[in-house]
Length: 219
Image (tube, one colour):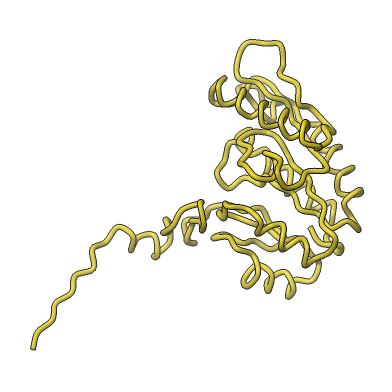
């Protein structure tokens, strides 16, 4: 999140990207790296949207998120939140296991997240957003790349040329979006780098992954 980003539009995208499938998506937004110039404003807007999210029965049209897939996964997520707070992160919203049957976990926001914390180093597979401050654009790019994962990344800026250069040349991820939520599209190759895998699915490149190239050499 760069200093010139359209924060209202960007925050809406961030919440959608984080809460898709109750946060249980491989390409969901998990770490929000925000330059210090707009970090406070971004966090306030993020918290307002997250507080408004309704957690309930997935069959109820009023619900935005439901339970996680399994109780043990919920417990792992909560333990990551607890360890992050113990390491210095601030629990700005949520973070309490509901007293009800099932794998429920509320919309949660951690701020002040940094290296050494699970919210910085690990994948939080559920409705937990981690806000990480960056000094400037260069520092934000460094932090975004400071992870062993590399499936998707987004950059938000009003300077589309700068955003495209950052996405194409500076972000170390297989899917890089400018002013948009990372998502799959059957027309485009989908896949990551580093510990987020190799190879691609979808698109003509994905089709080629399932073919055997035969070499015939005749003298």
